[in-house]
Amino acid sequence: LCGQAYVALSRVRTFEGLFLKSPITANDIFTDHNVVRFARKYNNQDEITSSIELGKELYQFERNGNLEGAGLYLLKKALNDLKDLEISESFNKIRKGYSMISCDCVFRRHLSADKEEYLSVFENQVVLGNKHTPFLHSIVEIILATSSENKIDAKRAMHRLELIDEEYKKDELYYYFKGRILSVLKKNNKAFKIYNKALKKYPRSPKLWYRAGRLLEENMIKDGRNQLITSILFNPSSDCVHRVLRENCEQFGGRINSFIQNPFVRAFNTGENYISGYVRTLFDKNYIMFKDGSKPEVDHQSFTEYVNILRNEQILNGRKIKPEEINEFTDEIFEFIYREDIKYAYESENDQNDDNIYFEQPGYSKYGGAYGFNDDTIEDAFEGDPENYWNID
Image (cartoon, rainbow, N blue to C red; front, side):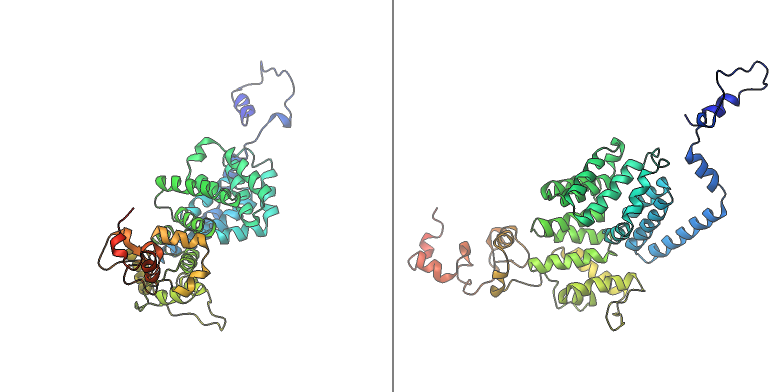
């Protein structure tokens, strides 16, 4: 074990009476690399300066309400630590960074750009003794597998994740990355159950809400707007979540009430790229949205109003499906919309019971679109007097 040679010899006060069974060689003395790294950094002015600069950058992000920027900044620093074989520092920055962000697509791109170099770190004998290494290795492989969507890589990453120590399986990151890799393997129901289980333990996690909503919308063909809105409420600064929410509502017909005069509402209702651009412009002053180099004029007050609209309404209800649009939806989507009471369906003015929800269609005024048929079909089916048959089993 590391340090045992020192412990034994440090007790010796005199060479008299000292006997060794064999000579001591360099191979008999083990050095703890953690101690060496600590000694190298202890009172190291460069390390102190680096820590101060890190704190300053994070303070600037957080002062502006940019949790996403702060988290991504930490994750980028974590990659530098990984290259330097600083496993504990890298793992701690990844854990803290992921506690702030909603979407890790930028981090994934950075990691994928030099994936061979990052993977080679885990072949180094120096890092194998670190307790965080197995979990960190599985995280790196899962992120790379989500980028390539290679089933073999995904299965290997899943296997590695399940081999980590039990203490890490209580971590929020364990649930998050397990859900991510299950979705790559197309086990969408299991992934959604994992996210829901995690949200019971970590109900304020924007990344878990985001992944649950995105999984519903992209892979399970269901409306994930409530999950996406909840993610925004816990972290409004992620432009990815606003964009995915807008895409979700485009697929299922939701809009924000158009009479609200707000640049973010207008961007949300007019195009998927604009809402993301508005959010990024607000939180990243160097971001250029338009091709001509101009940036939209946005402010925190307008953004706060927009977020409050999401908070108060929860469901975006300004747009109803038009009859000519119905053919654009698959049967599965249409069936889900009809059964799950999406907000562009509406209730009868004379009856507030949820069971009487119907779509706005031509000729539905008399019988409220009962059973999904128009008035003429109902009249024909009941020989012109459907009122007499209305409640017959």
